[in-house]
Length: 429
Image 1: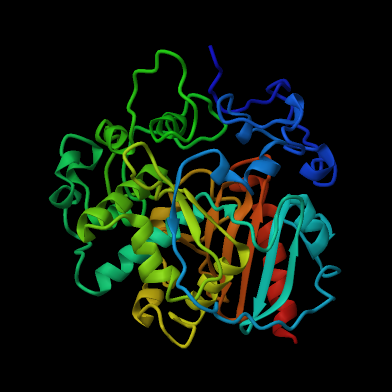
Image 2: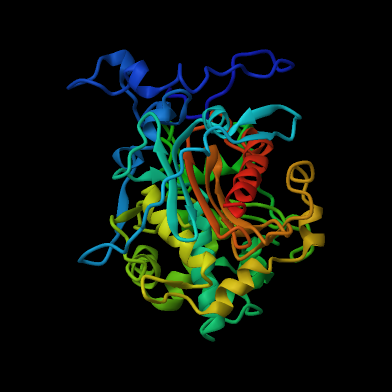
């Protein structure tokens, strides 16, 4: 029987895994998927889950559309919006101290966190852009949970425009979920991840619910004799409540899946079309994005997007400018302000796993809010994807990556101090 569990380390449980560094795991050096056809030992496949194993994922995250079905998030025809350039050659040598007390340069930080693409905007100008491995300016990269922030932004827009009542019961729009954990949940509780669920998002646990959810949506192969749910809707309807709603932040991808479904029901349009018409086209993006879909055509709103670094920078800059970009107001200022203000920090403080690296943060409408002195907030995805917006520094950083550790613990102790150091350097310019 094919093993469809997520990859596990072969090291003893008491020993942390030792991963090849960025240079030795470079997919070009390793020869993944080169040749026609590539050699058997250099072929990455969906059917055996090797596309999500390290170091293979260093290739596959830049080619995810080759493994799963997707729907296009179409760009508008015509010339893309401008991203003016003002390159700086001094950022690579910028030195800072990580949360672990280690001194390193910005360039060392990028390699230590297995970056595939990096773009830094300052006052709307590209001051740094670079790629590694399979990362490339014209190639879409898997965004994972950065997708959530697109969905949350659309929902916040609907709240602002009066189409969506945040206190409305989820089941008023999705009666299919009346017997599930969402039977007594509000829209706002879903938007801010305040749902009590019998479901685990522990990527290190091969028995966690996130892997069953992925199989239901076709993001992982199903073993022989599989009898589980075969769509996201089937999986969501079977979820059960654990604990109270509305009392504590608990990060669960299935909540965003519910929100995306809710938006599709509200508008009577697929999620890919909504992102395209309400965000992607007004931004003047240069490339179509994509979002993975299940067997029923339902988009993976919790993490299915792929897009180029430059187009993500356009989105981030629009947010920094309080909704204005490409010569017009893409979002009302109030929508961006509501997101940037954050949620209740007391809710966030109750969540285990974030206290050490994200103290004092909150979560609002599928965005992570720092509440630091710069008012920074960010979209985040596993394996190192992020859009970091620092209004005080007039800075946006977009990074794509293929870190062997899925959760933020592999990146945050280096990434967050690095971003702060870049912000301070740019503010002195």
